[in-house]
Length: 431
Ligand code: CTP
Image (cartoon, rainbow, N blue to C red):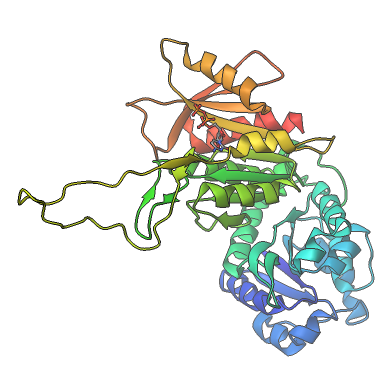
């Protein structure tokens, strides 16, 4: 496949060398189009040597071959990594002042952009508006990873690892190969059909910011022990993957972190850490899904060294068989806090999960409907729990309740991926 690798002028340009290698080793025909600023970080000889092709940044070289039109027209994929704040701004406003922006205007194939910059630049409303514009036009924007930045600071803004970006590129190439021939131009117009839209990694969540929490929290007692639960985090991860496939920019706050290409993973352990990470990400999101099994209680005190048994010999000659009493305190209810602090038209849609059992007081659905009212969220995904229901399974059976309707939607038994799509089918129209 023909891939154009655009490289903008950021320190993360060096990581694009590894992405180029991965794409070339997979047999793709890669043309590198750096910006002039990118060449200050990695020189033209490096790109030429790694791609086996000459490299230029402007539209005045090899004019007889009309590269500013041909490269974009012939590409099967354009990926820009890193995409700086400046490149995003130029692309969003349709400028054509160098070869890369010309390629972006002429491309009729999936376009992937991987922004990388300092957190302040990424968070700036101008950058966010440009990202939203590009996403709405069908560009697949891979959210930056969180972590150490160029200076001493940390936060969202890192270019994801080349392997992750490579996986996103392969996914886009595979999608476009299986899509109908009439794919609308990325960055040019609204999608003509849902399948064309999906082919570009777009979809009904295109450009939406989604936060998903997943996994069971661990509440430490001492350096070796914790109170936890049996949640595997699989359903939350499936929700995150499904949202990304429908075009969302996804942050996954999880106690069971695994690398998921194109998704910003924030690893946490305790309920308090999860609360901080979720509230922080929720402030700039369109949807928050609390799929995590957050512990309602945590030990009141943490012993900095391992709690020991005592080996004292008692007066009767026996050993001391006493055991410590663990005092618990309540954890904050993150879902309730999200609901309580939202306000205004830009509030996120909030989705809760509920593991319920029926009892003498009422059925599973009666308890769940009461919980939906009590919690005040927009959607509640209800799991019936019982001895025959195993944690960590690959399938799930749920009922989706909405505030706007008395009717529940029953899903399953179905794969957690299918359940996730059913949840997004319900959430997308609420946005
Ligand atoms: N939740 C939360 N913070 C907590 C506990 C739960 O955000 N401290 C969220 C879960 O992620 C889930 C929802 O609340 O989305 C419902 O969780 P559940 O444990 O069923 O609710 P509880 O309020 O703990 O209800 P119960 O009285 O049944 O224990």
